[in-house]
Amino acid sequence: MEITKEEILENHLGGKLKVNLSRPLNNQRDLSIAYTPGVAKVCFDIKDNPSLVSKYTIKKNCVAVVTDGTAVLGLGDIGAKASIPVMEGKAVLFKKFADVDSWPVPLENVRVNGNVGKTDVEKVIESVKRIACLYGGINLEDIAAPACFEIEDRLERDLDIPVFHDDQWGTAIIVLAAVKNYCLISNKKLEELKIVVNGAGAAGMRIVDMLKNAGAKNIF
Image (cartoon, rainbow, N blue to C red):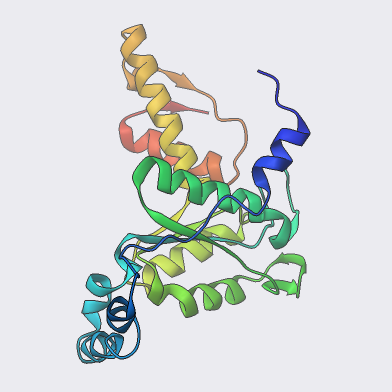
């Protein structure tokens, strides 16, 4: 399959995402319900009972795809702006395959020297905490190790929504699925396999964790 650069650029014109309305907005009555004055009643209900935010807003089916652009795919440290097409792509996958709304959240000025240098763990954690109230989950993406480990652990501890670092667990899930399928077609047992993991980065370490939890014994 051949794909030209021109095709790729054309497909990305204007971005790969847009916002659609979930309710009709055709007349004055619709507008009064969706916005002023009707919306105030919903706001006060949420103020009095914060748990209603998941019932009356997009929160329950919306994921933030968060990155600082320090370890993007096979592209490396390309920065937050250049990472946006990849983050849009991940949001496209959420919507297409799971009907989950998501939005790219590329973070600038969260490095040790503004936009230069390694990830500043505290800045990323603080930034994500500030925006978390809108989302039902946080998908951390393409954040370099070792910062990604502490960021995930602390956000998972401090937030009341799921936090998932895709480069660790997403990759590990796929590897475990592949190994399990290999066992099925080869009539072998997981604990009998000799498994070599080449590299101990974010993905490699979590691959080992998941394989061990699933019953693998010989991992090098």
